[in-house]
Length: 176
Image (tube, rainbow, N blue to C red):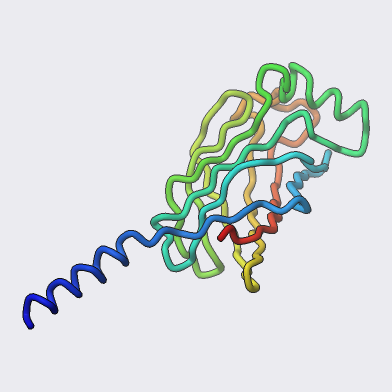
């Protein structure tokens, strides 16, 4: 009887240990918006993977890529300028990427800690986010700020504010 209990406990332990966080498919109606006092806009193309389970944060991970060429400020000349060598240099650096290394619970939601790569420069970044789930659908809303000059985007004091506020709204569907 004692052996049976030990076997059952081992099976339960190994089953719990192998439970993985949930995989989510990014829906097409996401919104990656940026703004400061001088310019605002969106990036229209994003891809990547989201593995997230609020009860299994240690297995959760974000790996997201934004296509620089998809920048839209509502002004064609401004878009062309933003994609050019002085700013994002989309030909040389076609993506902006965020890869999390750790996700933690906060009082207001969660935070994803990881590396943000823009313009070929990788820096530590923390994204505060909320997660609202309804059935097999959910929405992540992340907020953070970036100093563009830390990543070599444009020059300091270039008549454009250096800090950009980023708001990413990402609806997802659970992959079963």
